[in-house]
Image (cartoon, rainbow, N blue to C red; front, side, top):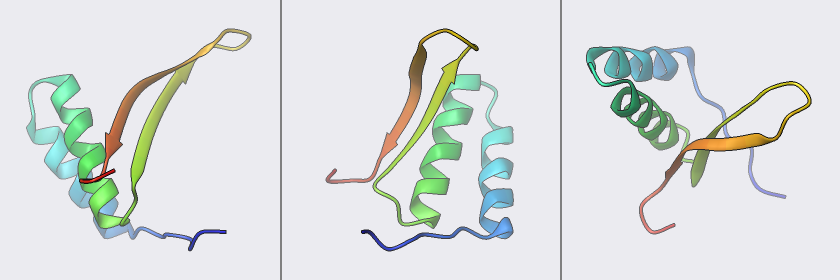
Length: 67
């Protein structure tokens, strides 16, 4: 099993601060995911959206360089 990754409140706040500077919502989410991925040393980060009883969509995805 892979090594668990933890992210600090400071890293989350930095990610939010970067994202909230952006006017475009899609770009804002992309920046947030990228910053969170880099700070947590993750290979991938996803956002899934869905409604109760319905299918789930992978609406956003970030992948580390080389993945």
